[in-house]
Length: 268
Image (cartoon, rainbow, N blue to C red; front, side, top):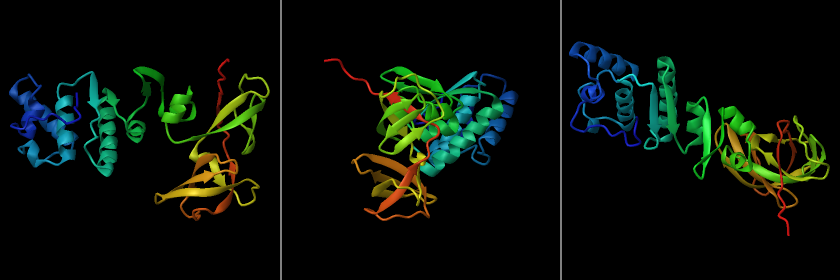
């Protein structure tokens, strides 16, 4: 197990921490330690103590110690939560590569969706102690099984609509046709999930929205747009498409991969 706070022994060196769970002869132990030191890129740090290492280096020692006994299953409890964002991203990819090369299955607990997407082949979304959906990162994002998963995974907004045909809906964003059919009868009231990348700037569109807020993120800018009805939706545009707050811009929906949920009505 790799603990959230790494749980390294402060009085033991890097070599000694890694060797802690190894109960083999000295020659074999030294060989194993050297292999792991190279694997986690800590050559030259063998004799240092935890307080002499950076957070990223401590995390690598904790990983090497957990890998030393060659476990069938590795448990990682929010192992990157104490690291800055850039180091977290880099180490998550490095560790995924290491685990793949060794063929070791792992269970990662995290609250960071980007981390889960970067590390995992399969993800379980848990709410109130129950797994709401288990699947690939792609399926969780594009095929959420329920309203909770749709809200929890990624960013998104919901707009109200009514069914016209099994795969076509009428909404304040116009007539929307998706790539799947639902079994609801005509005029069923539904909510449609709109991802930020489903909304595109289209100069020829008759549909307009007011820019409520914007967050510049380098290669892209995230906008919050307010429709005429007052409904707000998120949009993600390339950063060269730069619009001022309160400006009104023409947009359209490009959401072939349509996700809809029936609106439940409580009986009186």
